[in-house]
Length: 169
Length: 136
Image (cartoon, rainbow over all chains, first blue to last red):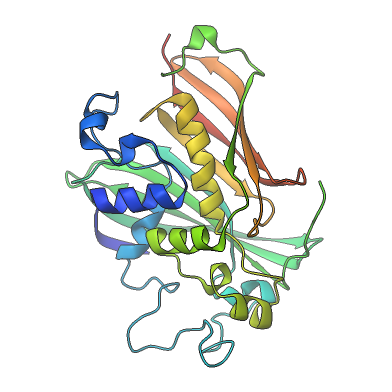
């Protein structure tokens, strides 16, 4: 992933906070936020993930004029990408891990760039989904001054088959 | 409302219910705000007939985001320095989740926490850590 311009905007932060069920006014009320330690509206801790909105090639967003693998007339509109069996049927496998390191918190007006470098890949035999293939990537978010603001590390996993459901602890 | 190192004790916990009876609509909301439109999260027909799951399920990042509210309510605004998780089990519509932070280490202006979120059956759905700046 490479994102050339991720403008951090107050309305996007508001919608993101709502979607994770967080009504803290530091995410929505500028006057309130000014009086907090944050000093202004800030973004919730997982907001950087919404950089997907600004990645022109992000494959989990329908693109105008291109086939989309979700249902329409038929259960799927296109062959899922990359194979990998049922669990990977979503096209990108499943999200296994996510880590953030905050050098400072994002606020409206920031304009970020994000550069992602692939990390290591490894395999494991899973009890609930067959062979698992893990792959890691590291994304550096820099602000308008070129300062590193967030370092993110994600791990994705492709499964051989859909994950068996565990219903009890 | 920030935490104070002198008052934190290793092993003490803070818990919060982060969602009660998760609705499909909230998953749709998260798809829209995050930009992750993977049909596995919002498209029941695709998910059951093509991907082979019993129903749509939440984005791992939605669970991480909701768990983040428990954390920031606890450690204070703009205080988190690290937050990382593993997604250990899927979260389904109808799930009720409880998130817990446990003090692991305190020192040097920072506190470290173990973070865990469980569903209504006691299954751990998210497991990780957080680090926050704390007052003396």
